[in-house]
Image (cartoon, rainbow, N blue to C red; front, side, top):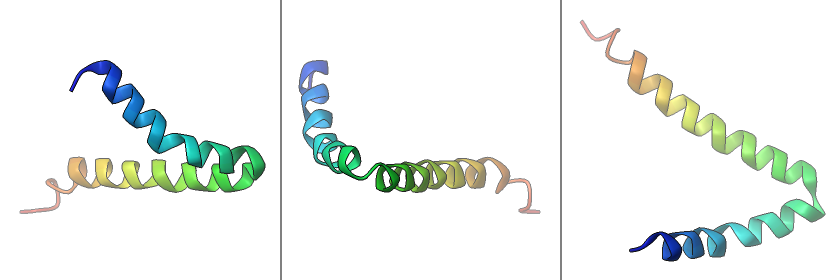
Amino acid sequence: MSASSGILLIDMLVRPFFKIGMKFPIVLLIMLSVFYGYIAYFALRSSYGQMTDY
């Protein structure tokens, strides 16, 4: 898979959400907050989860 096909795939996946987000900006904000919160949760869990295991 080359870079151009990866960009095309991302564009095809993101474009419907972007169209919804332009019509309803609060929905886009909530979706982005949930998405970034999900990433942050797993990043923090993986970094600090090893400290609690004795």
